[in-house]
Image 1 (spheres, rainbow, N blue to C red):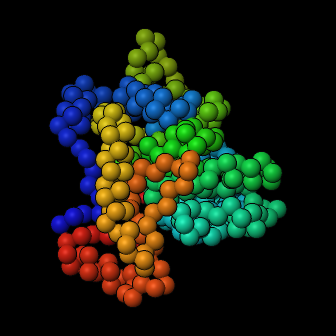
Image 2: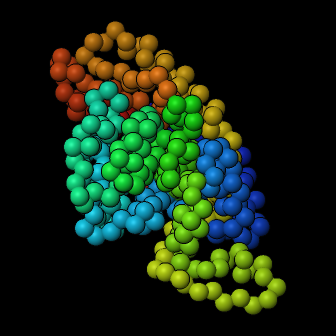
Image 3: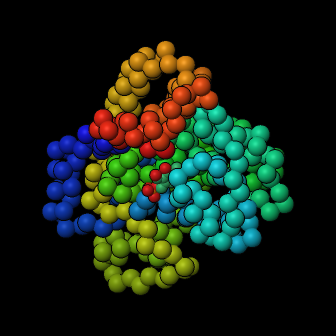
Length: 319
Ligand SMILES: Cc1ncc(COP(=O)(O)O)c(C=O)c1O
């Protein structure tokens, strides 16, 4: 059976988890901090904040962006449900815009048509690892005074105009679910270049506590924390972070492998005129989290028949 995805985990990750467990510090602590620093350095962002998954990363990004009830946020009509749910969590309304046929990413032209007086943000998704045109959305956000949030759940290791995804805008959210290129079981990360966002995100992910567990634990004098606003328990554990550090070391190699396999598929399918192969334009660098094909009108069988045929041949696929 060829599964839809299989995380690449080895003895390295198992050893890192084992070693962390034996330190006795297993929730958010030094390993999370190390993972954050290494992730920020990898993406080229100033700061990174680790959280429990990408859905919680998106939720916190909505909060720090000031999105609230009555606001509208434009997002792609084709994405995973968590994209729209994050908008609903803060009481705002997801406004769905079309995606482009060639990249499956949000269409800036259709997006602009859907901007109203209530629009507060654009939530752009890097679909299946293929970067969206971040500059086009930045320009729109500048023009209409909107916030830009990137749902980069699938895009760790991808790059846009020569810079890694994670470095281009104020809030970029990643996932480390096993379907992604690197995994910590579950897990997420937010990168930002804004110090105020960085501080608030750290507060919000840990119950709004003014002093974190580690500082309290290491203090030589008693400390009492305040809970300065309504926060959440969206922490990543040190066990997950230890695995994440090892995964990050392999990320560029994993992406290279995926790209090598993609070119094998591209070569094998290039003569089939009824499917459109993935399109990677100049300046766009995909991690190929998924290999997606578009069935053209000329295709004589429908999608579900093809998916069933693949499954009959022990190959999982997803729509
Ligand atoms: C585009 C997109 N956004 C958000 C998520 C949610 O990520 P997580 O499972 O880490 O919460 C996913 C997960 O598949 C996704 O594909």
